[in-house]
Structures are given as structure tokens and as C-alpha cells.
Length: 261
Image 1 (cartoon, one colour):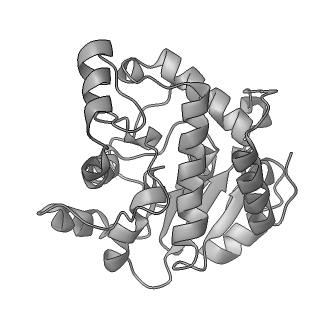
Image 2 (cartoon, helix red, strand yellow):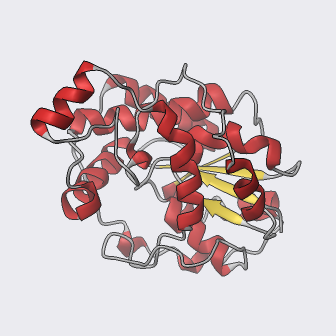
């Protein structure tokens, strides 16, 4: 089995893919985040990976008068200056590189990469992959998972309403779309030209099994398609998707070899 990293916006099906890889025998970390209603089978994320990526992204919080207004007057955070553990909902413009690693963090990055074969999942990889790149073995597989942006945004907003650690994050539907666009633009415009072998996978392609063979070949691993439970695809949305998100979604679908829906 080949080492891999799973990227893509939170609430897009990354946990489904990670769960299949966990079943296949990949190492995913210790003390993984516990399942809850939004992910009854589990998140398959290691807090240590999250913490490293949070530390990398901390330098990209946007500061200024707007920040002081939100934090001191409204006592809220936003996707431009999120709090600890909230940076999976960070909106970083695609023209901003995320490659610098804070002092002392490289040793911890190398330490988590000694467990092989590993499959680490974190939406923050969508931004931080260049920071990890010098420490990854040649041939590492990168999986980019996505789904209909309207469904993703609806699921993000539901998560923000239900989780205490997100209670002080001021996030509107418009801001959630901005996060989705920023994250996938980083992947297709900044990461894809450098990491040309990224495997793009639509959530639907996991549910219907059409991507399983392709992933098995890329990972050199046997995957159990029965792990995918269509009943857990519960979120629905009839949102009118912003043009920028619709165009980007169409591009992602082409890269995955599927049609949007």
C-alpha cells in the first residue's frame, strides 16, 4: 500500500474515503476524533495532524481594523481570522502560498510520517500540502474529495450551528461558499500544477463504486466499497450556487471524469 494524504473541503465526503482506507489497514493516527451524529462512522482524523496544520495556518490569519471590530465589538471570529481548531473553515486566497513552517515544527512533521503505510486526512492539507512536501516520499498519493458545493455549504452551516467549538465563528452562507471556493482553487490552481498525480474523486463516485478500481490501482490497496452507506448522504440543498463555485465544481467534475449533479 502506498502512503497518501486526503484533501478537500470538510463535509465533502473525505471521512467516507478515509474510513475505507482505515478498513484497508492504513495507519491514520492515535486517538482519532470520535464519531458523532454528523459523522456516525467516524472522522478518521488525528488531532496531531490537525494541530500541525493549525500551526502552519496560524500565520495566515488576516489582521487589521476589521478583525478588531469583530473580536472586540461583536466578539466573533470569521473565516479570515478563525480561532483554534476552526482553520478547516479558513478562506485563504489562491494567490497566497502556504509553504513556510514555524520553527520547531518540522521535527514533529517527520515524526508522524514514520508510521507507514499512512493515510492522513485533514481539510487543511488543501492549503498546507506544500509545507509537507519536502518530508513526503516520492510516489505519495494525494486524494482530493469533493461533492456538490451547495450540499457541502449546507452541511458546513449545519455543523457550525451544532458544535460548541464553532459557536463564536461568524459564518454566513456566502462566507461558506468563499471557503469552498478558496480551498478548491488552491488545489486546482496551486497544487495540481506541482503535484500532477492528484486523484480527484466525487463523493458520488464512492457511493456508486465507480471510483473504487481507480483508487485501488493508485494506492495498490484493496478497498471495501461496502463501507459506503448511501443512507448517510442526508444533507440536501436547493441553493442557487454562485457562478464562481459552479464553474469550479464543473472543473472538478471533469478532473474526476464525471458529470456534475
